[in-house]
Image 1 (cartoon, rainbow, N blue to C red):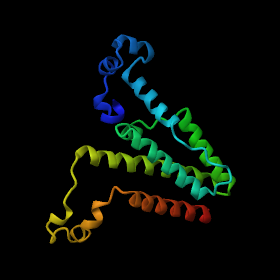
Image 2: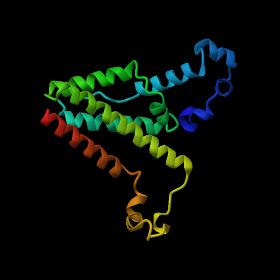
Image 3: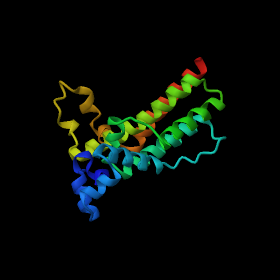
Image 4: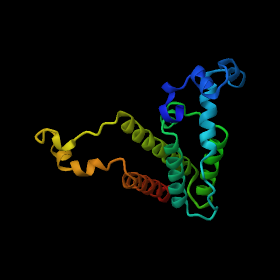
Length: 189
């Protein structure tokens, strides 16, 4: 329900109806809608496929982590923005962060750079999916070619490129730029 329609589509009463139980039954398991939302976010985090070998080079680890986050959140498009609105990692999320920082540090990345790099990649992946979701929900794609070229010369010239802005190649482009920045910081530290 929330995975498809977001937080607005979720209510204890609506969920109870979909499950064929009373709202009071749900309140026996979840004391509030916020507790239910936290449980949903934790459940999605548990699905992340991050069984990465310890010997995987750290830049590749960041790529795999970002890809797993994106793939998982694409299955629950309504929840992606909630990971931004409610950044309260616990359980599996903390384990993911701890393991990633530890893996980077074990390969010589300084602690602070590892911390910043891991959180930057996580934030990028979640933000990219949230942006994809919002554009899909809006069901509109701006026709950049129809913009007034005297005011928007660059956007009208690049109109064909803008169509694929939500693409895998755009995700990879941004991720590689981010990883290159983390690499530079690691070398400079």
